[in-house]
Image (cartoon, rainbow, N blue to C red):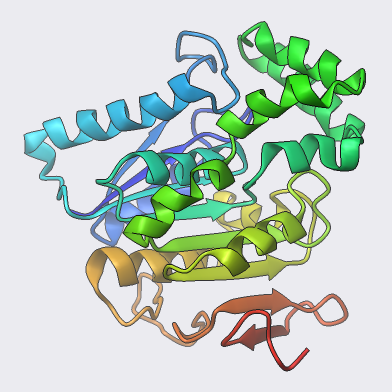
Length: 292
């Protein structure tokens, strides 16, 4: 079976992806969701996607492939997630050659740009992450210490910490293997700003697709987690997985086989939801497009 592995979002419950995991399993995928270190019931400390978190991804892949009775296919492995899980999916794809593709929803390419762009602390979101992390998980002491350095304007102190946790740092590894990347970000997101991911997307030479949705952080994709039907982001993500893990034509169908609600074709490179008419999406076959 093709394998899909989800890592949790920041301070999110253990059953975060349960509904979508079941749907993927019904479609013939072997699906595993895991809580990263420091978030109960997992032990250890939250590393904020540090090197130990990145190494854990490889350990999880090892675990899945060792379960022979599950019949995992080592040639077809996807990492996926929202927010924190999205960043870990991209980092894991960069470090582990067994990863076939990555699905990153509301993720980040560069942590420094997200939290300290132009030497200006992203104070609202940084405080939210720190307080929710303290209340929901066991933070490594380096995280509040680094946030104090950010608030003090100490950019050099934060730089190495952020670089280790940024997919852009390891972009060459992704480029060499031409890992197919599915990226989805939201246009009003002030944590992981869409322009940051768009810049990363435009310089990436491998197979890729990007959705730009209306909404703030992680809101465009949350409908799928709540079992609201025909969520565009999840429909597109499933079509992407079908293409790269099962070799299909990239057309998503619901459990009844209904193809009336299809995602954009696989010729679409960038898919943008209009603000004035949210049911309308513009599709572009190149990015940046000459149509703009």
